[in-house]
Figure 1 (cartoon, rainbow, N blue to C red):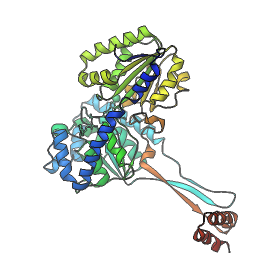
Figure 2 (tube, protein in one colour; figure 1 turned 60 degrees about the vertical axis):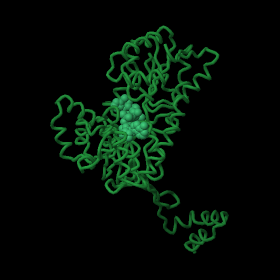
Figure 3 (cartoon, rainbow, N blue to C red; figure 1 turned 135 degrees about the horizontal axis):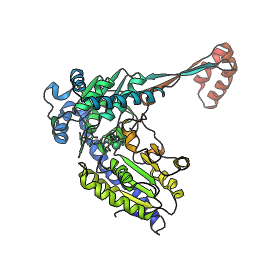
Figure 4 (tube, rainbow, N blue to C red; figure 1 turned 180 degrees about the vertical axis):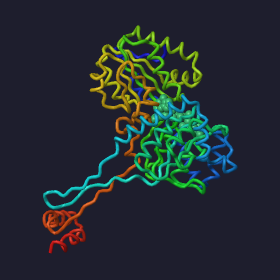
Length: 430
Ligand SMILES: NC(=O)c1ccc[n+]([C@@H]2O[C@H](COP(=O)([O-])OP(=O)(O)OC[C@H]3O[C@@H](n4cnc5c(N)ncnc54)[C@H](O)[C@@H]3O)[C@@H](O)[C@H]2O)c1
Ligand SMILES: N[C@H](CO)Cc1c[nH]c[nH+]1
Ligand SMILES: [Zn+2]
């Protein structure tokens, strides 16, 4: 078994810290490459996009049809779906829509005892860029997870970017676009697509907010472009932490760990258990399952480089470790998941009990699967309707309100050495 850590070992603290920081170094290499790509797209626009799409995706952007996918093609893809797949997509869409509709915020408007009217109005951004990954696998589920909350928020222009490796677009992604109702789909991926959405090019008009998941290049591009545009959060290579006691089926837990390892060679899957023989059974089950997965190359690389099994003396040690990892997904496969959840402060999403595999949340549960990675669950949350909206506050005073709070404002303005501020209040106090 590779990467087994025991919390009773003398070196545990050091080894655990290494595990927590393991992917940092590769992130900084990626940051340098992404900076170059962003600079090139900013300077040379579509010409740079053409070069990067050829280099990274083997996709030639010559004709208009190499750049965009029409609504007509999306409808045809939807019509051609096998009925059970269409039903699955529709079920996912309706559950995601219902969950996100409940997130719509309420505007506030009230007058307080001093006679001051105040409040805030929520409005959708004008245009959102939605990244739908498509390098190793295609992600129709991510199209729904991006586009449905944006539509619920009331965004007028929804712009999808997604790579089409070797020129092959994925029909299920197109069908999902038809269901969610997006306005534009550009066949461009990676950091170059994110740059195009932020800066705009001759072909691709800029957006106000960019959301969605992607590999390390995509996630880093969003991070670097925050401020030029809004972003949801940094949603990079997938992660899972499973906390499991010995009363689980080892095969189930192995499958849960591999479900995220198969996304990306830099994905991270970690098991914490209080039972060493159970840990060995899970490890064996992983090796067996790896041998048969279609995605075994990616999953093997991820498990070998970034996977770990941590054996603790008691599961009561697990929440503190989970909080340091601040993982994207945390599964609690234990008899009393509620008790453990109470102590888990940092996680993108928590999956309670033995019958709730993370993969259910990837597709059909309802909550968003676009979640913070790289320990960012310490300060960030999953994609929501609010990521497509912003709040404008407002204030209205009459004579009564001005008399009540104006003198204090003038006093503070003088204290800050800003006499014009003070005067703009005092002239109204008479
Ligand atoms: N955190 C989340 O919420 C979440 C959700 C779904 C998926 N994901 C992640 O999305 C990712 C999908 O990755 P993917 O690769 O399949 O698709 P992707 O679309 O994210 O990335 C493919 C693009 O990466 C770029 N790229 C590849 N190699 C490059 C290189 N060497 N230099 C510069 N750019 C390069 C290319 O432009 C290519 O178009 C996975 O990491 C998965 O774990 C995360
Ligand atoms: N687990 C991914 C988020 O890290 C989401 C996803 C989409 N499809 C399959 N999985
Ligand atoms: Zn997944």
